[in-house]
Image (tube, rainbow, N blue to C red; front, side, top):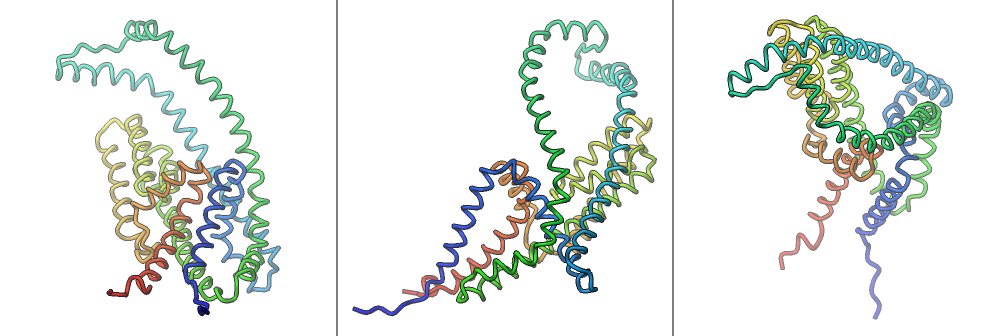
Length: 358
């Protein structure tokens, strides 16, 4: 009996899932090798529109890619030259003020704790010597276990330095060949699925572009907002702490929490009054309010639909599965999964299985 050839709308999805599965396995197997490549790919995706604009002004693709790569790394190096010395200075200030902190704990906090809870806690040379004597063996065992880890971290640090040197070269070639790769992938798609591919790829590009470029803009704005705000309070190295908080703002609440913790510690060591500490807290309260209700919704947009819950979950899940590389691709993959879920939902709602009543 002859049966007519029916279309199989699920076939592209099956192929796509197979491709994603293979890519996930490659990420897992080549985790350490892929780090600079994934970083360069994410940066190239963000910067590719800028290269395209330069091309429209008559600049060759190779020269435009070189200019964008050079400008990006000059900006990153300049930022590091500003932030790192400030953080090192803050660390030196903290180390130099440790005796004052110990004196404050010994003469103010511990007497209050002893009077409040009836304890007899003391912090003096005799107490510290007795604690070290009782825990000498545990400290030795801990140091012995930590030495191989420290040696391994030293090797990892050398690998990180090599990846940082390799990153500009990779970024240049990603920018140079980005359009050719896009056209190559589109050429390989079967013609009967080309319309579906163009629609899904266009939706992914919209979501990824708005999210990544929007988050980058939010990071810069919040870094400057926190940095100049802490600078106005008179906090030493406040600009560096604010920029660190801004850079970490892509993880919801992590940037504000980290910056608040660092700024609070610095304020406790620098200011001798509650006014200075409250002014630092006010900067983060205002910054968090502006980010949550004005800056992020306006720049990134609620229409993307990637809630903070899924951002945190994707960072933890992909980071646990693929390490640092997983954290780099967590947000792009979460946005891609969001688009695929929307497409799958529409396919299901328009399917005969869903619409048939009997």
